[in-house]
Amino acid sequence: YATNEMEVLETEVIRTGAVTLAKELISTDHIESNNDTKTDTGETDAKLGELIFSGTGSAIPCKHRNVTGMYLRMNNGNAILLDAGEGTVGQLIHSWKSSLPSQCTSQTAIEEYRSRLRGIKAVWISHPHADHHLGLLRLLSERNAICSQNDPIVLMAPPNMFAFLSEYASIAPEIHRGYIAVDCRDMMHGKIHPMGRKLYEDLGVTNCMSVPVAHCPYSFAVVIDGTSFGRVAYSGDCRPSNRFADVGFGTDLLIHEATFEDGMEEEAVMKRHSTVGEAMDIARRMKAKALMLTHFSQRYPKIPPLKRSIQNGECSTSEDDEFPIAFAFDFMRVRPNTVSTAAKLTPALRLLYPGEGDDDVMDAELLKEGKDSVKELMNVPGVFAAKGIL
Image (cartoon, rainbow, N blue to C red; front, side, top):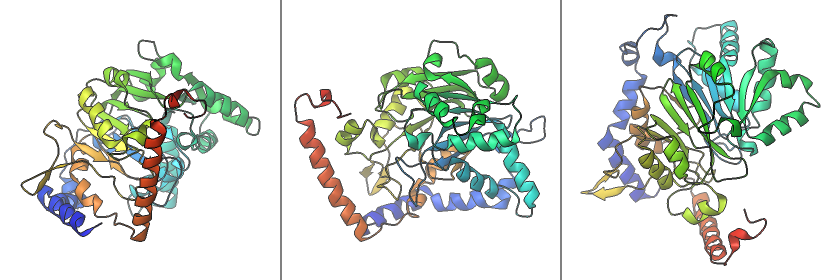
C-alpha cells in the first residue's frame, strides 16, 4: 500500500476497533461464554449452522484465492454446496481439520471427514464455467466411496452440466449413482421444485428457486428459504439482475459476485460480471439484511477496495447502507450470529494483504491498457450484436 493508503487503513482499524474485536473472537473466554440454544443432539445451532468459503476467486486458482465454492451447513448438520470449483474438497478438508480439537486422533479426523461428506445432501451449480464445477467430480467420487447407493445428492445444475457428467461417466460409470439430476430450468421461481420434499427432509429447506441471469448461456442465481441463515440468495456470476432482486427480496444473507472494483463498469459489462458497487446496489434493492462479496478477479491479491466517503478525516459507508458488508476470503467461516462481526473485521483484514511492490505498478499499467481497449470497443456501433464478442 502507498503511505497515504496505509494511514487511512490504520485510522479505520482504530476507529472500528477491528483488532480488539478479533482478539475477543479468538479468546477462549469469549467462545465459552457464548450461550447458544441446544439441539436434540446436544450440539448448538452456532456449531452446526455455518457458511465456509472454500474459494473466493475467479477463473483460475492463485496463491491467494482458490476458485469459487461455498459450504452452507444447516442446523441439522447437513449441508449444500453453492458451486464447487476445482479443489473444493481439498479446501474443505483443511477447513474441517482446523475446527477439530488439537488432541484428536487421526481416526477421529477421518470419521469427521466422512461424516461431513455424507452430510452434503445437495449441490447447486450456477453455470457451466469450469471454475464453478470442476470440483464436483472429486466430490462425487469420494462420496460414492463412503455412501450407499440409497444416498445420492440432489444436483441442481444447468442442462449442459449433465451432458458433461454423462461423457465423464464413460470412464467412471459409477459416477451416475452419486446424484439425482435437477435441471435449473425446472426449479425456476413459480415452479414446484422436483425434489423439494427431499430437500426439506435432508436440509430443512422450504423453498429453492433458480433465477436466470445474464452471464453465459444457462446461468442462474438461486434463492433458498429455510437455511440456518434464513433466506439466502446467491448470484452466481452475472450482471446486476432486477429479477434476482425481486425474487430474493427480503433476503437475510445475500452472497453476490464482485469480480471488479468500482470504476471498471465497462469491463464488467463486457465480461458480464458485477462490480463491488453494483453488488451493493442489488443488496439495497433486495432489502438484504447482510451482504457477503465474493468471486474477486485474481488481479486482487488483497481485499478489493470499497468506495467510501471521507468526512472529518474519517472513513464511512453511505448512510443508505444499513446492512453489514463483508469481503469473503478462503477458509472464512461465518455463522448466523457472526455475519455483522465479519463486516467489522474488514479493515484489519486489509492489513494482512500488503502490496506487492513492482507488480502493483505493472498491474496498474496493464489495467489502464485494458480499460482503454474496452472503451474503444464499446464505442463501435453494434458491437454487442457481433458474433463471438460475448
